[in-house]
Image 1 (cartoon, rainbow, N blue to C red):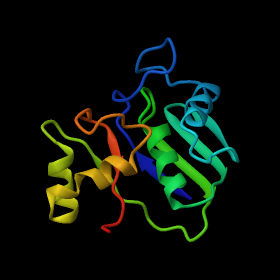
Image 2: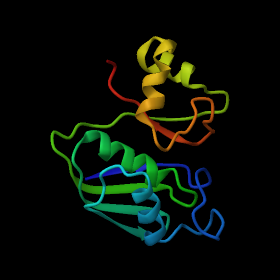
Image 3: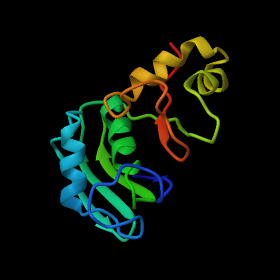
Image 4: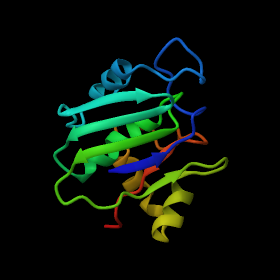
Length: 145
């Protein structure tokens, strides 16, 4: 079981409420399923501004993308997981700061900014373009290849 922190006031708005109102569990699940990440066997509950995800996924990539997809939602500040993952490892995440670029993040993570595309690819389909990241967004950082 893991607990991951996010910024409640940053992320995609799913419902009609503002940042003080978290999305419903149904809206979160619908958003998660829209990414086609292999998360059919997970359920989501919402307790205040915490999303609780339970079930199983096929691999570490699906697990990490699931956390990012749910956590980068307006109104969610924590994602708690109770998810079975084959060969689970501790995920590595980066919270985008003002002025960050994928190049700068790759330089910090790998010592080489030219590896920014690995971070971009690791965060698809939630990221649509490598230049469109925002402060408060949490990105997964894959192992250096």
